[in-house]
Length: 110
Length: 116
Image 1 (spheres, rainbow over the protein chains, first blue to last red):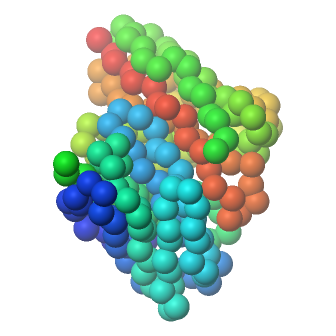
Image 2 (cartoon, rainbow over the protein chains, first blue to last red):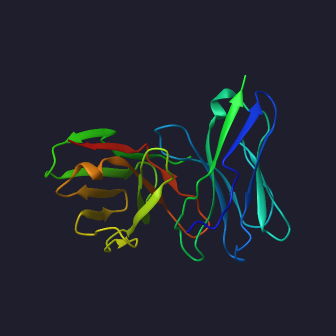
Image 3 (cartoon, rainbow over the protein chains, first blue to last red):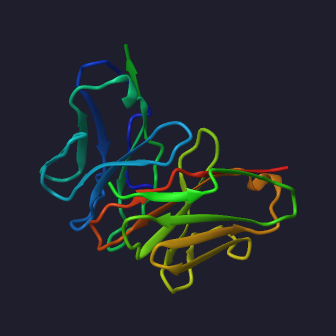
């Protein structure tokens, strides 16, 4: 079973920041949090990942709480092309296995 | 990011025949590759994990004799759906990682299989 819980859907206005939450309360100390997104009928696209510290790259920022039980993916200026299903994944400890949950369907509105 | 390519992007085959799907890592050596299937409006379901030169490890409920996985090199894994039936129609996606743990995996664009 997936180790994460995400809201099933969210809307965001174009140009505004999209904040996507993820709960992973059973995460272990050496397990990473990964974020991917999937646009219809395509393979998932890697966004960002982290272990303990907050991370930022050209696509997004990842904020992980101090107790690591939850995280937030931030898309700073959402565009229509960011409309997708966003998956938060915690790998099984010591492996590369991704078990996908149901994800959050983000709709960016013009 | 790194590139993982699947071929073909879509395939239609007759019931009872076999079909092979290729997954290639184009710009890195993939020590581990994964195969997923995805039904419409559902999430990805992990089918198996394959390491180069080793037998694949299948998830519970996945028939290893039906879904043959070969990972003969560090850049190529293949999934063969044997004796395909209409219920095998699905979106098949591979991913690849160079490892170690903590390294992100990259996904192919997926293969849509339709069995008629």
